[in-house]
Image 1 (cartoon, rainbow, N blue to C red):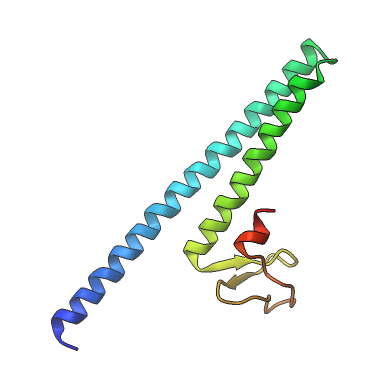
Image 2: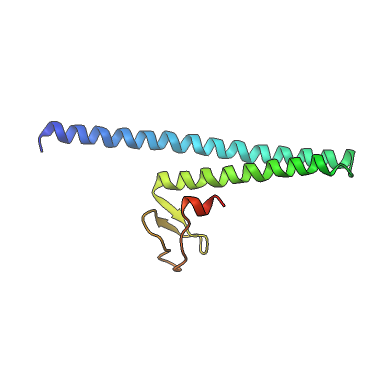
Length: 118
């Protein structure tokens, strides 16, 4: 392997790391936005209930919006963990390398992307 090949590999690695950092930052901002929006919706639920406690349809729509945003947050957190190359054990909250299917600390099965989105 020549010096140019080593330089090319190093520049590719640096480029990938920069992209991962950028993607991580974007995901973190999106997660914060969704969490803030959930708090606003909770406030809207309180106001709607205060004005008309019998209007279940409006309250139901707002609750469904919260559930949708929580699913988005869950998906984005999984993507963020994947960028870092780790999974979080649902049983003991340990950080485990992404390539493993079971937790090294407690032995629990680790979630896959499909499992995590259910």
